[in-house]
Amino acid sequence: MNNEEIIEYIESDLSEAIVTKVDSTGARAKVKDPKTRAKQANQNSSMSKAERKKTARKAAKTKKKDIAGQRIKKKKTDKAMKKRKSMGL
Image 1 (tube, rainbow, N blue to C red):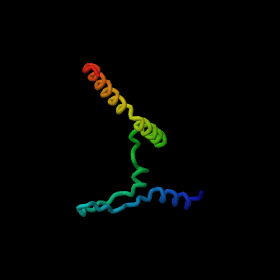
Image 2 (cartoon, rainbow, N blue to C red):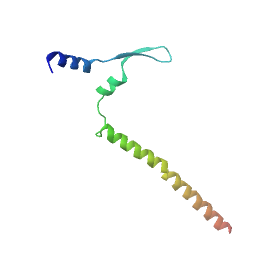
Image 3 (cartoon, rainbow, N blue to C red):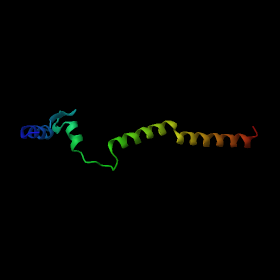
Image 4 (cartoon, helix red, strand yellow):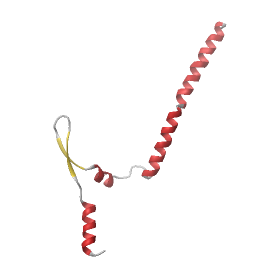
């Protein structure tokens, strides 16, 4: 890489696209575009992006199983059966 290519590379990396956002009240705000913000954001967990995605996929699967819902169902069924037994049904 010669000097011109290096300068061009650095400038392309430093270019921050500033976007004007308008909310429902009409207030305008100048913010960096999402790609730039993602690049400059601090990592707020010790996991990498791929690890976080993997964990999220696993959590979604676990949520689908709905263990808590099944536990509640079992409790209600047991309570109802106990009541029926005490009534002699």
